Image (cartoon, rainbow, N blue to C red):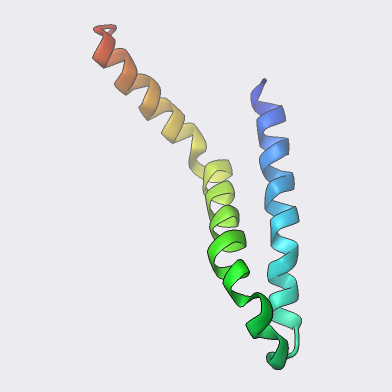
Length: 75
């Protein structure tokens, strides 16, 4: 899978999991208790991880490749 496909998948995950947060923000205050836990513990972490991966994922991949190369003796 090439990087463009990975970025497109991450972008759609980010968008789809952001929809419940929009509902959380704009819902009446009385209805928040019904889905606050799901938004806090499922949707928000997924959005944060996918956003950070799209933003700085290239640095994580680069550091991981360097580290595994050094462990194998490939400098």
